[in-house]
Amino acid sequence: AQFIRQYKVSYPVLLGDSAQDLMTKLGNTQDALPFTVVIDSQGRVILKRLGQVRPEETGKMLDSLLDSKKK
Image (cartoon, rainbow, N blue to C red):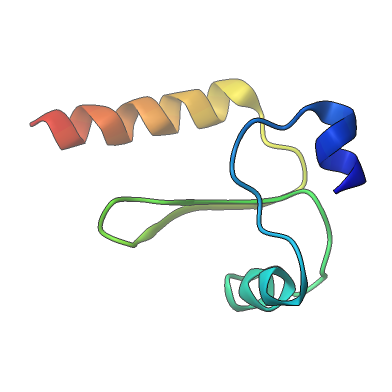
């Protein structure tokens, strides 16, 4: 919660024991942060990244998802 306040995070973030369980199930076996998961509209995991995510990498991946959705 302190991280979210300090960095003014504007996107949904799960906190608490259930979030920790979910992160482990999604592949974060080190219980480390940051841990990013992108899930498409079909519920498929598109990206899992432990550590910092480069904005340009994420932007291209999200643009690709949005473009494929329009077709």
